[in-house]
Length: 81
Image 1 (cartoon, helix red, strand yellow):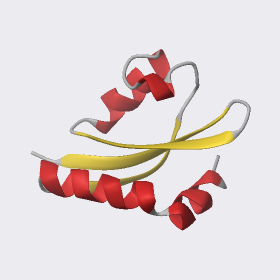
Image 2 (cartoon, one colour):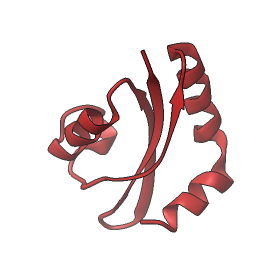
Image 3 (cartoon, helix red, strand yellow):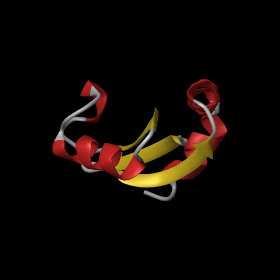
């Protein structure tokens, strides 16, 4: 089974990013855009900015944590919005 770490972005009032992990990236982004899922993502339209395939859940969770802390990477990704 594959796991994915992803970064999505929205530009409703300000440019904002969200980092998460999932096993089905397309289904997860559809849920974010329908308002189902994390409370933080509700009420916005999201665009996939970055994703990475991982071999295990623990690796995906570690990668998610690294990306959340990497302010420089998230700043660069915000430019794609």
